[in-house]
Image (cartoon, rainbow over all chains, first blue to last red; front, side, top):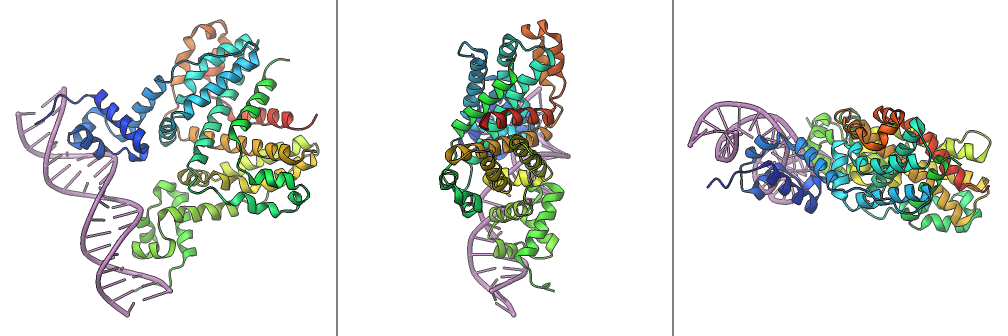
Length: 205
Length: 205
DNA sequence: ACCTGAACACCGTTCAAGT
DNA sequence: ACCTGAACACCGTTCAAGT
């Protein structure tokens, strides 16, 4: 029994489910075929190969991300809010981040925020190359952070290594610092601090 | 002919060569065995499995990274120089970055810079929790950037997507901005700008 | 135009057996 | 203590053959 006309869309849907459940490493052409009740080779006819399947999935997921609405009245606040929202949206889709990494499609993750950022940076009075630089600096910072955080989340064990360095000379003079470094970092706060610093240095005084 | 006593060290050496040549995805237990002239299963006796092999490799590569010597006289300059050096050292070892990502061992990449950063931040007059926050903010920013750049380097095609957005309304009023965004970003410069902004906002005025 | 099974060249890991 | 081959359960992809 052949089943009713396999479509590209149907394949993407099933692939999205597999990725959501087991990550991109859990997306195999064979499991996908099993899920769809077809031969593996049928999938190749529709999507080419695994790489372009993942590319298509990334494309679709980015399109789902929805436009970002800035909040606040001061230009710096509005830009920081765009950064914060972008980070939140991306972190809410760890499979997207993972797929983007697998295929090296970082730029795609930038798109939903770029429109909003261009607008805000323009409103803050930046023009031309300086405006472009500001947009990119914010984008890079957000995506860099998101990649880093995703990486930390996947740490196999709560890394025990950081503390043992802190018998080191300097830290002995400053036990509060040693203790603070022994505690796990607060990425939320670090993100806020760093982003605020960046935005304030980018905007015209 | 059995060959002369396979050692853990010898296995790590051969694995490092494979990773250097073909990346971590090119490191397979079977190729490794072939390279070493042993049965695949011998390797398992010495290193456990592929995951702990990669972990050991990361550990070793981080240990090779060498201490970081700050340059400059102003505290801000010295901290920025540590950040710059860390970034350069990490970027010079793309396989390290890739392995760290595969195994989620980000914290390991922080280690070589942490000593130097603690010292500099302390010299700049920060103490306790504030000093720890400064150290971590710099570390996060560097590693986030390195991950992002590595990601961009692996882009399958020079991403064509960014420009097509720039028929958008705002950019039409500012053709210089549209042109600047159509050109590829200059990550070197963005890194410098962002890091400088961060450091200056962290240090006491 | 679409789907199929067989086949190829890979993987990591386990296990019982050897010395 | 160390090494072995056979076997298991996976991969992605190609290709000739079907309808």
